Length: 318
Image (cartoon, rainbow, N blue to C red; front, top):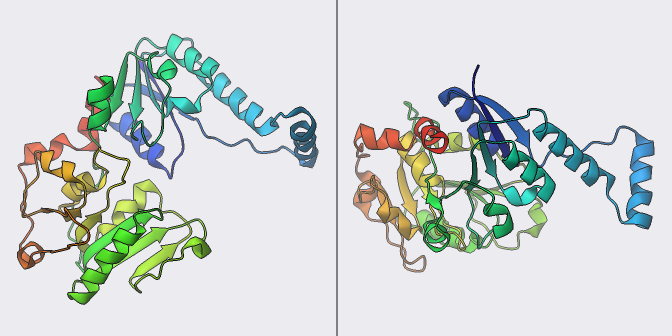
């Protein structure tokens, strides 16, 4: 009989789906997945009306109660799990978290965001046997176990049509993106960008024509396909994030060059100035012509494989 692994994670743009498929493909566990943000759907109009009065007169939310009930019952499906992996434990009720941990022989929390960006209660984190974090500052400060992100798609022979590609969510990085695209356009660098925003009308900045606004986010499992026809991936680091995003690892898997504002990229064992350009000052942009023209320099194959989804799964389940 296979050992059981309980994987609990929010459904953020399909990211959990990529990890779940990786756990199923590259581990020896039977993987049980629970979506911690699965919304409750009303059965009928009467239930919708009932919830309206519950919220108005009793301060209760039927949808929230039902969602929490689903989560609790899903965890209780099995008496025991061999390993619990959970992302965003703060999204669970105290009771649900205690149930999941108590039914698991070993438990690990995985944090893909810094404590500064998404605060996590020590009351929750202290319940786990290990807390894995991709943020080096948090690992140093709180004693978390360091992990990295990973790539899950590899290079193919695609026709290159663009020099640089950028894919981000609309936030306070937009002004840096605009500065870079003005530089690209003024220096004959062919670039493209897609900026996800919930509403186009919230964007006040004047964007260059080659920066496209989209209102439907690209699922995580498909997002790296946007870079297929480009030579370089552009990575704009989040101001509250010390750890590296997925971009350096996607670039490694796809054999793309990388331009990034994340200084920590220099600590990567596959860092070299032929493939990776660190931009120290966004107000003083200079992209060497050699960086644009020189061919991609393949890192050692053993180093590349170290950052694959397969190896990541092996690390977090060992």
